[in-house]
Length: 138
Image (cartoon, rainbow, N blue to C red; front, top):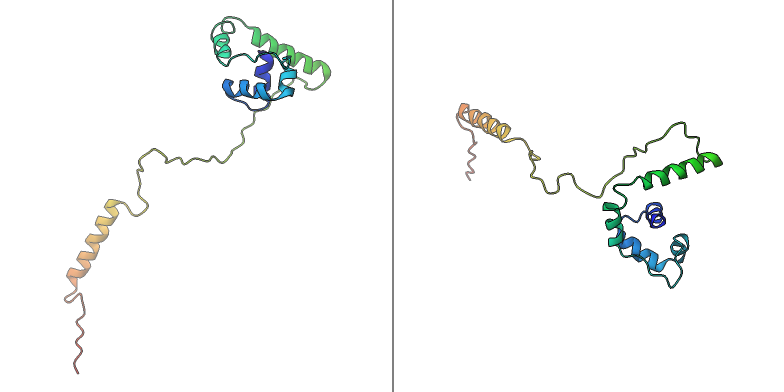
């Protein structure tokens, strides 16, 4: 089961259902998980049952992780002196306004529009004849 989780992690398979489907199809995954061609792939619910039961109270996953890191340090793959965090900024295919009501409109605010209309009305009141009258006499 831990080998199956490693396959899912390494190949970006985030869901247990999908992981079980991939193990049914790919021979390389089956080989890594030590499953023969006629062996049955565990059901997806097996992961959650073990995660909430057997793995919750034990530190077996931590021990496996430490053993892998120790083996990598022994072979010289990692030094174990520090760590790195990837903080890459990636463009998402989502709108930050999706599902929210906008608080600002694209145009001027309501107060700005009111002030503008007051200024225009004052401007027109000051002029004696705001609209020029053009007469066309022939």
